[in-house]
Image (cartoon, rainbow, N blue to C red; front, side, top):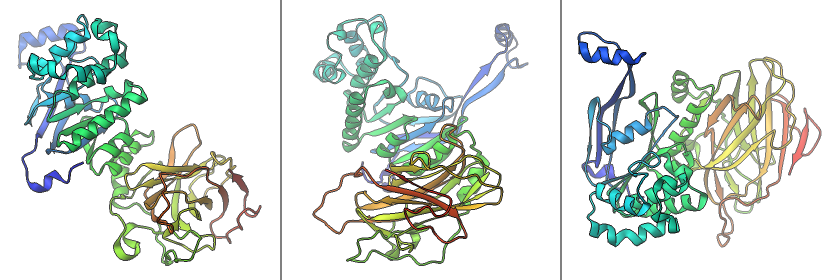
Length: 474
């Protein structure tokens, strides 16, 4: 992706101001006729705002992602940008040739062949027949639908239709590419080819609007991201942070006001215990930092944003990373062992619960995910007021770089409801003492040990039956 295009003060290629779209909902069909007869003297409809008070801009070379649940207003927004809908209020200005892949099959005549639709679709995008002739072989090769190009589009599967639509959209040399959720119907090979092509367009300086539910794709592709909720933009910022916030929005126990409060004060207990760095000759893991600012030398990244959500029936009170000697640490050597400690205070009696965490890279992509159910560890019965410390001993088999730990406590494996979840609670760095070694992603399998004890008791020795139980998950 290009460097920050907004820093140059360039004119945006897309600029939306106070954008809104309203629909009139009539309880009975005859009320629509009555409304036509009386004009503005009386109202027989209810207003439904699919989109309201939306302001954003996209600069040349930017890739901007929009996330939102079904009905949030994503498709309405894209149709307003592309000009297939007229705004009810505000305006959107587009500067440059725009190519859009909206709803499945949009822009195609189902009665005509794929061949004919290529020429019609290209003409709608402003290309002459000669221009389309020059691009036709590339379009056909990318679509990869063979002899079906000569059959009516109505006979196509959803996958074939999106292949052809995307092939046309990217081969008209657009300055702005708009991609809706249509890519979700393609197979893995085609999706990979689409992502590669989008990256090539990014490198050429084109702008991209990417809309959908795929937080990983938004995190990997986009330089900025937005969340739409009930027709309004409720979040914007770095893609990793916004993607995590959207996942919270999608959970059953989401509370918008509570999220705003947690953003301001995540409520983690801090520790005055000093963290230590990795010694040159020490093969043990050395990690631990409660925030990026606590990393020595000021070299920690600032793109790990801390926030939390959950229904509050239990609360994570601390999350720390230690070596096998029990020292809180802030760096880890590849291949060494570390212990992740998560303290949880329970506000009600629980017969069942699940504790775990994600290790994420600085793009907010999950590298490792661990929980007590996965490790076949039976969590104990807890009473209201109990505070337990869970310890996870794991190998650090990650490539060098900065990572964060996001701990969580859920009701069980199947419900998908969180009592508490803290995004980026702890940041640490993985280092490699052997610069000649190449490590890609994660090296598996990794050995893990899980244990639990009362938070105010002495830590149980690793691989013993002390405390409330130890189970070895391999």
